[in-house]
Amino acid sequence: MRTSEGEDEEERAVQAPARRPGPSGHSGGRLATAIDETEQLVLMLGASTTPLGAPHALALRLLHCHLGIGMSSRLFVALREEHGLAYDVGVHMPARMGATPFIWHLSSSADRAREACDCLLEEWQRMVETPLDSAALALAKAKYIGQDAMGRQTCGQIADRQALVLGHGLGANYIEATLAMAHHLTPADLVGAAQRWLPQPALSVCGPGEAITSASDAWASWRI
Image 1: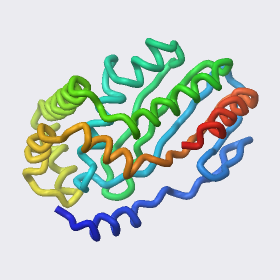
Image 2 (image 1 turned 120 degrees about the horizontal axis):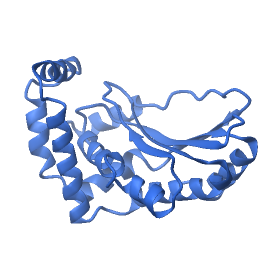
Image 3 (image 1 turned 90 degrees about the horizontal axis):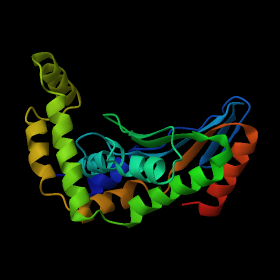
Image 4 (image 1 turned 135 degrees about the vertical axis):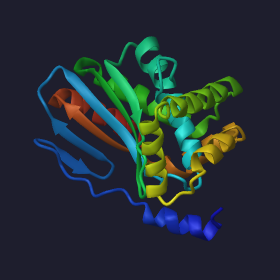
C-alpha cells in the first residue's frame, strides 16, 4: 500500500499528453476538434488516470465494466436504448505502466450533435457525483470477474496475462489478489476514484463543421 505522499507523487507523474490540432480543426484547453464532412459526429471524452496496480486502478476498472461492458452497460442503455443517440458507444481503458487513458467514445448522427454531447456530459457528471446502487455494483463486479475468466481460458491466454502482470512489475499473484479485493470495494470507493481522477475530462470532436459548433456549444455550457 502506498503512502499518501507516494500517491501524490504518482498523481504528479501522470500528466495528460500535449494536445495537437487535428486536420482542419483546432485544439485549445480541454477541447480539440477536427472537421470531417461526413454524416456522423464522433465524440471522445476522457482523462489520464492511474497505472495498473496503483491505488484506485481496480475501482476505475469496475467503473469501466459498469459503463462500457455489454448491452446492459450504463452508456449503452442511456445513449443508445433510451435516447437513440449512438451508432457506437463504449469505454477504452487499456493496461498501462504510466498514465492510463479512461476514454468514452460515441458515434452519433451529425444533426443530433448538441443532444449527443449534452447526454454524454450528463453521464460523465453522473459518474463523478453519484455512487452506484448495490445492484449496479454487483453487476459490475460480475462482469469484471467474467471478463477475467474469458481472458484466461487457454494456456496461451494465461501465459499472456501473466506476462503482462510481471511486465508491469506486479506480483505473480496479482490477478488472484485483485479478484479477491474486488469483492470488498464499495460504491464510495468507485465514486471516490472518479472524483480523484476524472473530474476534469478533455473532449475531442470530429465531424461536419456545423455539428462541431453545436457540440462545442454544449461543452462550453457544461465545462465539467
